[in-house]
Image 1 (cartoon, chains in turn purple, brown):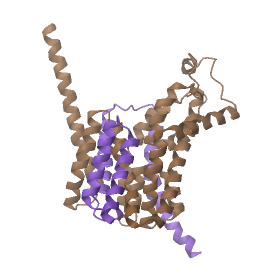
Image 2: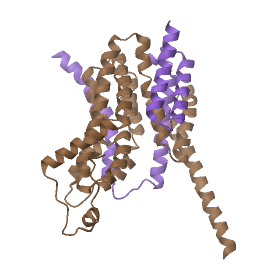
Image 3: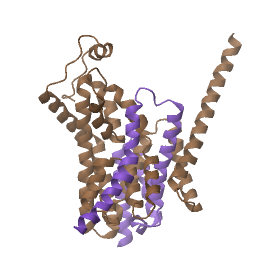
Image 4: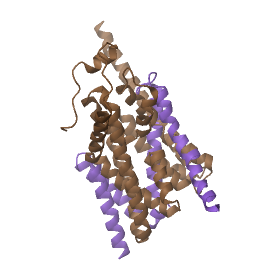
Length: 115
Length: 274
């Protein structure tokens, strides 16, 4: 019984602080579907803010000083990201090629450092 | 592409005008076939494999920070937004819940224009608002990009079922990836598990770069990368929000100045002629 209550915590937190604040934008999009287009000035600004925040998430992950990724040296993380991005550009902006190259680079770098 | 039927000429026109030739709802077995076509398109999409890789990293992250297997699967089905899920996984245990909700909501603003641009392509007489709830929820960067590419190729009455299949296929890839990552992280050496987490930032980097077709998108993303460490060094909290507001507003201002300059130039060019 106490285990179920204990498990209810993270699920409730997911619903209230993950699902709802995320889903609200999809709902607003559904309701405003006639009134707004992607070129309206508020949307242009809001999209720029969202894109910058996405970059913020990326920077936090690559430069993280805590958490599991921080066990990999910063130079390896940055180097792998740069290599992946170069592969992405060479392969005509292929997300597939970029992600695989970056991932291969970090695994190789981690292996070489671990050995 | 044999199973993507092209739109019949005039079909959508008739629907738009509300004429008597309103397309019938496809019978259930046809709708199900179209749904399966959507799943097929998902499996053929590059995003299916990127999502598996991305969510392998996410599942490993969920395991590292102590969430359960089912919590991870539930968060993928309910939230269905990689950046928001990264925020949840990395801050739900440490930051205040309101800050988490704020960061999640600020990271998901992009869904508003995406949903608003998508749903009109599915609208026709007889389609109720509740028929659009599932397409609305399934909308994420991957589904939206593939949907906007494939939907114009087919008759309007097939689009909802196809998009639902496409979204279900891609979300399944993410759930499978999350499950694999969660199980692998428990067995892998810690350094390798950490390496798996790299799928997440790599997928964010590549898909954002791929989707940044305009100056403002590219600038906002590049500035965000520069501003984020600076904001983090100030230790003022709400790092993501400030990063977004500062870098996003600068990118927007540059975009506006550039537009104004273009408009001025056009106006000047027009003057001597008159």
